[in-house]
Image 1 (cartoon, rainbow, N blue to C red):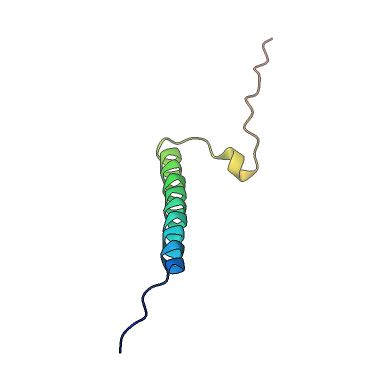
Image 2 (spheres, rainbow, N blue to C red):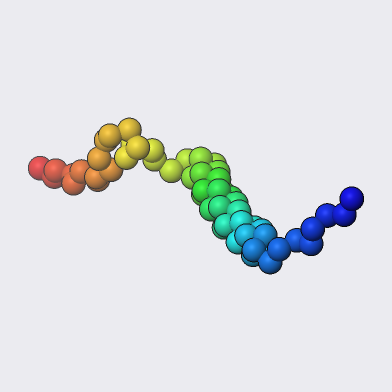
Length: 61
């Protein structure tokens, strides 16, 4: 029993899926690295908790 030769469409589909997978992986890696950077440097997370990140002016008397 012999297998049929692989059709061209399957090679195209594989390369397209590989490209989409690499782009998705790069996006996930970028998101992860930005999250790690933000957490390790202790940036304020008030904006994520519904609090505005606004510096109040000092009132001098």
